Length: 355
Image 1 (cartoon, helix red, strand yellow):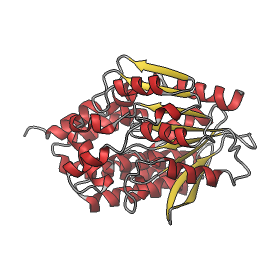
Image 2 (cartoon, rainbow, N blue to C red):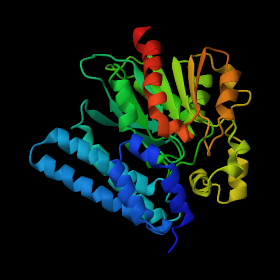
Image 3 (cartoon, rainbow, N blue to C red):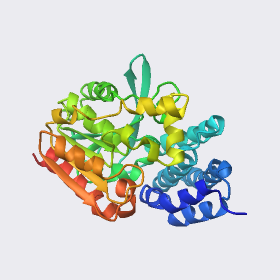
């Protein structure tokens, strides 16, 4: 039987993301090779998550706490990638999502450095995040990490690490339409609102220097983060990873699974309504208000968000801009992380730690 074209596309285009964010390469190969139909995608990845969760719980029972944290984190990422675009079966998606959150929450206290699950009030609802602080620094700067359309805070381990290693705290959170918030809250084009709530919450912490605060956004978060920076000048530096300048300009050419996820998480109800909704996710007339330093990453081979969107963002802002155009990079340049991940973290450290 021929493979489902959705599985073929996933195997061809997602290996960089999965592996760079913590899935062992052998797991990616084993699981994707075992799947012929998209309908069993979530089940297959959840089964692989079960293996890592078992290893984590065995390590914890034996007193090997660091190993437990590492195994449980990989389990969480496997469960997450089972659910991330599996919107056609919300019940199965939620089961896998609950396992991702459960494993990451259990892992947090055993990581190095440790993490803390935090609760942030927002618009009568609750946003959840994971706060981690670098070892040996009493009041570090902080990077607020903004998710994309199908990412969630449970996917952020390797992205958090590059900032933590450079003396910055990280707060990865699920905003409206993302992760734990996607069930109650639709995608929010005016993303300065949830970011403002997060910064308000951080400003009350005595173990974080909220005066030295940066923001990082991936994929659709690469729109959200600069949008927030345009309106909230408490943000001192911003990293945008392959975000859209105007989502409606590329909506019809996005992969089918991505479109389906947007329809679901925007709660638009139909493709036509979602296309209309996507026009609200635009930086026209807004990017010019960004005055903080901005680091923009684009993959020239990006099939989701054409790299011209990043060029338009870099050309539109009022402040200092660094553009890193990865010539052989796909979406988020996950296939070439060595060309931007450390470099962007160094840039953020220059803005928040050294200055």
